[in-house]
Image (cartoon, rainbow, N blue to C red; front, side, top):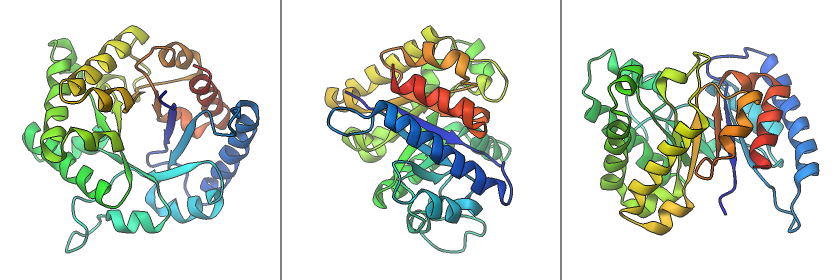
Length: 269
């Protein structure tokens, strides 16, 4: 059985001392949740990860080390070292105790799109970052999803399949078992709109089926989470779907009460 994962992406929020307060509050609520949901074998019922801005990784390491919470970065370089001003390498990230890294978030992709790079080229960049994360024992959460234009044109599955095929060609299907996929319809991110639970299930099932064409075991084991305006009032219905294994949470991850309710919804699906 796949353990649910809820990942809180802070984006470029919570400056200065408020980041420490938020981390401490999330940890306190997570420990209360853990007490409620501890399984018979003493294992956790859910994985929870937070993704603060990189300048606060030291805070995350100091506050969360030794807890059941995980942390990671919102991006990683496709290179391990060199003249890449402003980039952060996987080895640097690992040095801050990170377990996870977000790769290919639509808000990162849009920066490359402004450079008018071809979508296939963007997918190749995602694949290179994915390879770098795997080589440094980081768990990549690879974001994948369609724009409003793709959605309106009925191209959702085409967009999903394209990146999955690039990833499989790059590192083989079995390596995908070391990753998490995050379906994030771009039209639902930060807009207040959300995919219906049925739509999320259909796309997650499509992703799993596409992987199963190469390896059934990997398709069964890989966690696929949903991202796109997840709130306490819609989380339970989305997470209840069999192929939805948790969520990538944006704005609601900055509110401890809301984030805790979302984690509870995932843990009790």
